[in-house]
Image (cartoon, rainbow, N blue to C red; front, side, top):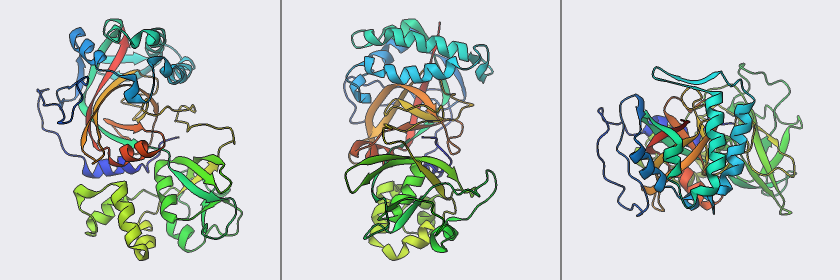
Length: 388
C-alpha cells in the first residue's frame, strides 16, 4: 500500500517516542529476553554516516535468520529483491538517489547491490557472513524510530443489510488533489456522500473503517467466504489528527498505555463516545477494490510488498531501492520490546507521516502482524549495504 500521512503507529511515534541521549555510540545491554543468536548494537545518537568494520559486519550477518522474517530460506527473499531491482532499473543509473555530505548513492549503485544479493541468496543459509565481504557497510545516524503497519481483515457485505450498516467509500468524482473536501464529520454524520453510489462495501463497526483508513489497505471478508483486497485510493485533504493524542489529552488513556488495542478496548467499552472521538480526526481516506486475483498490498513503487522485509521510509533518507539491514527489538506478547529483529530489509513504500529517520515495518496480516504493528514503537539501527 502507499503509506500516507495517516499511519497509526507513525503518528503515535511522533507523539510518544522516547528521546535519545546525545553522544557517541556507546555499549548497551541486550534486551532482557534476547535470543542466543541475536545481535546487539550500541545506540547511535549523532547524525552522520559511519563506516562499519568487516568484523562488525560479519557479526551482524551471522545474526541473521530467515525464519525471523517469515521465510524458510533466504532464497524466499528473491521476489522482494526482484521488485526493488525492477524499480531501480527503470531509473537513470547515474542519477543520485541518496545524498549525504559524505555519501552519494546512485540508482546504478543500488542496482549493483541488489544484483549481488540475488546472486548470494542461495548461499546465505549456510554462509551469511559473505554479506560482510561482498558489500561495503555504513550505518546511518542517529538511530531510527520504528513503527509497524499491517493488513487488517474486516467482515463485510456487498449490500447494506443487518449488522452491516457502515459504508466504505470509493473516491468521489469531485475530489480534487490539494483541495480540502468534505470532512469526516460531514461524511459520517451529515451524509455528504449518501445516495451517490460510492459504497464499495458495508461493514459492521465504524472503528474498523477508521483503523483501515489509518493502515491504508486491508482485506474484506464477505459472507460467502470470499476475500478481496481493498487499497488506498485518495484522501480528503484535511490534516490527520491522532486519536491516541486526543484520548491522552482528555485523560481517557495514559500516555504510556496508548496502543491500537487499548484504543479499541476503550471505544468498545464506551460506544456512546465513539462518534465524537472519531470525529476529532477530520481526515478521511477513500478506497478501491483490488482485482479478485490480487494477492498482497502494493507499496509506493507500485509493486507488491513483502511482510517482514518491506519497509516504508522517507525517500530523502532511505529511498526505495536501497539494500538495508535493520536491527531493532520487536514487542513480545506483553508488548515489551525485547524480541530481536536483525533483518535484511528493503525500502519499498513511503508516506507523509514517515519523515527523516523513521521506519515503518510492513508486518503483513494475521495475529502476529496485528500485534507487532500495534505495539512497535522504539528505536533501532539502520545499515546500508553498498557495492564495493
